[in-house]
Length: 99
Image (cartoon, rainbow, N blue to C red; front, side):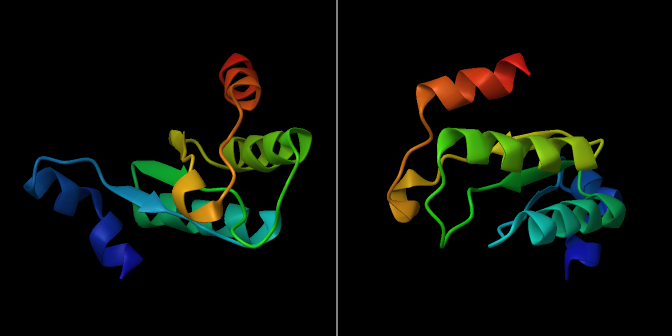
């Protein structure tokens, strides 16, 4: 399904960029999903914090930094606090932007 939907021609047909969400419980899986989405043609990868794990800011920074470094396409850092129960702090967001 990702290969079909992430195909850049599909996105061009509808005049949209193709964004693929890559949720995962571990960094290893998140990086694997992000690389797969990019290879399948995603123009943007969106990542949320690990759903089942409460992480401190330094851990989340490392999580997102590794995902961002693993792909060439832009990465959307999604603050999924509505269903994960913990917002990304302003400090973490600023640190990610500055990195």
